[in-house]
Length: 492
Image 1 (spheres, one colour):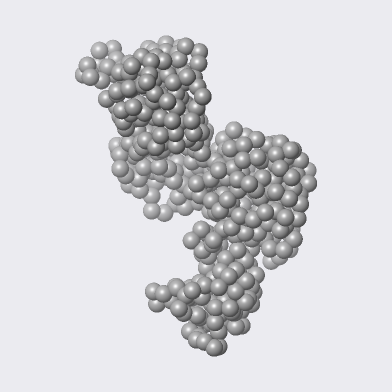
Image 2: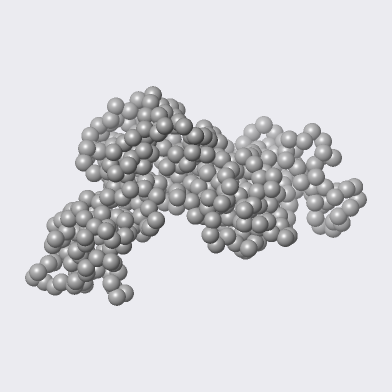
């Protein structure tokens, strides 16, 4: 047998896809080895593709010693777990902590082509001259994925980086199982809600000429283990895959600014807060990005909720660990939800507000707060949001270097009439001391107003639809209102 592809649910190997008995050709160096009843896992990492390597043998878990451990050995482990094997790294000894388990493998020697760690040479099960200070840790590669031209980071036309190039994915036979693996690979929560496959016509423009087919069983931890093939010829532009991944519902609770407040996540049918001891600037960066604040224009800061008042949350998340690159805060969750994880004064808060700077003639310039009010602040927020606007955008002005002084050599006075869609269309004039100095810099808090909201007992996922028209909320009539209209309302 050669070119074998199984979904993992087959009861017989002959039920899998392959060219036929005796067909396909295969060299002896590529014969498959497997180990039944032997598994591997990664422990202690902040993301699924990294951690301390542990192996399961004869009913117990144990560690591996890093004596002579190479990237080839790590590739075999990553292949077993289901991650891609190109960008694999070995971390320093005990990088993910030391274990108290039995040291199970030592002096491992793999070629890198094996499909199972048991097929490699090693000193024997439980045979070693090693200490836990030399426990092996690795980081496996993940298949690069992106969602393009969506109004939110959780939706868009699917593109995959495979064989050193980006390509779209054809929608032939692409279903919710495939979408589930894609969303899971990107760090979205697929346990509580299913992703949806939508027409790529909603995410048009500049699609790659290269295209792939992707077929998964739904249980894979990463797309790399799915069947990925380049199509020839490529599918037409109307046949590309579009996806909406389920997002974690988040909000900031504050009595003052919409860009800062106590962090709350929707979990298990109710809102809960997060303990602040593990909530840092990286977690704040993920939160602000999810809320629509562009990272290149903000300096997210983690705060204690004592600044925003205590909550009555029935449950609090005990632990969170982010790298800052996650698309959804769900990928950062490490701890458990409970009522006694921390008290209300120790809950996490975040500040997504920003000091305003302009790039003028190749140099960054702070804005002087002379004549600075909500009109100018709103135009700045429109510039940051990007045209065309998928939500109504307003800005709140701050003066007197509210977010701290800068060190830019230039200071610029800005005057807008409110109709501009970009701050560079306003009147700009360079100013110098003593007219304005760094104690008089402008700041802004951007408010991305809702255009659609749900009212009812569960206003997160179901309810009566209302639309904001010129600041006035009005309910929608159900005449000719169908699934397509409901889908667009849910996206907003």
